[in-house]
Length: 103
Image 1 (tube, rainbow, N blue to C red):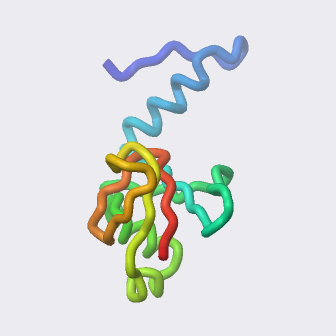
Image 2: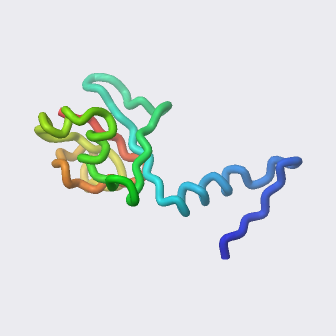
Image 3: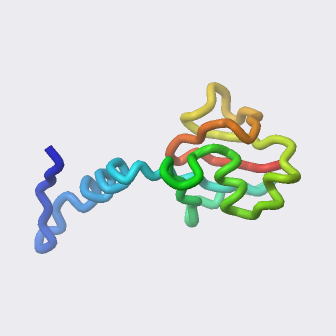
């Protein structure tokens, strides 16, 4: 059941194919935001359940390990929170295309 019709000649179903790759690899894109600025949607952090997890801590570690040591809280926008923005700790699980601002 893992098949998709794809045509390079007609450029058919590239978007579906790309979405399926992200789904099968279980990758999570997380965007970063600086205070007072819009989120940077051009360069996401890519997190995975198999490598370090998809938590706020994993995102902070990928940016710089000192962010984990000095972490107070983070604001998160997206599907993983009830309110946008929501104040979250290191253990919060992030969803695909969430936006995070570390304080």
